[in-house]
Image 1 (tube, rainbow, N blue to C red):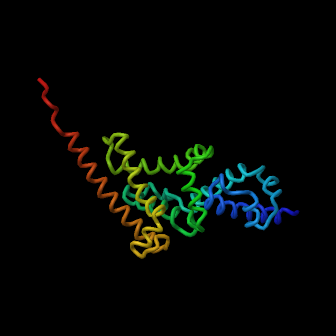
Image 2 (cartoon, helix red, strand yellow; image 1 turned 30 degrees about the horizontal axis):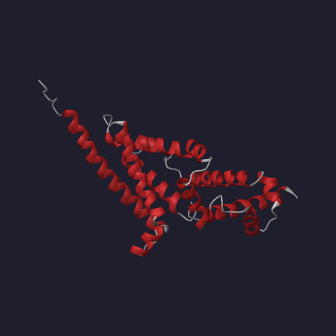
Image 3 (tube, rainbow, N blue to C red; image 1 turned 120 degrees about the vertical axis):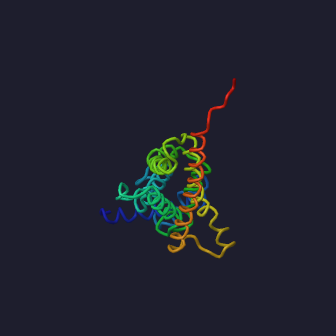
Length: 226
């Protein structure tokens, strides 16, 4: 088999595995079913990936790496932008990763694979967090701290980060419900833009309120315990 044919076979297996693993989960998915969907023989999984576990590791990593590369969350000109503008860029990137047809919702299994990994972590989750999630969290932490001010406690920054990310994830994980309740498909590009704008404005307002509380706490006179 020449190099082009080998790459085509390998890519077909990865595409099929992303769908099958996502829809059925790692334990239930079978190599036979993946190969049938990919149009390849079972031996090819052992040849290219060393077995089911190796295939799953590569599928998950490739899926996340491609999505993160396609939709960055730190603007190239971030140093020239305000914290509010950086947050807008960040939120748009996250929503596109989760909702865009070019992201994790490209077909049903892709998004479910990531959701399953979060709900039922496998041994690869630690690697995914360190390689992909932690840098994203650090980027958001810097934005949030910039909006809250230098006196914000680490726990306050963390809670605000989770609140912002939680809004984005809700549109992805509750997409079937949101679509039925409001007759809106959050994966459509114009809707993603609207959602990014809303989540950003909503978050900035919340952060401003918390910053005011921090400033008030800072200037509050000490309690006389004498």
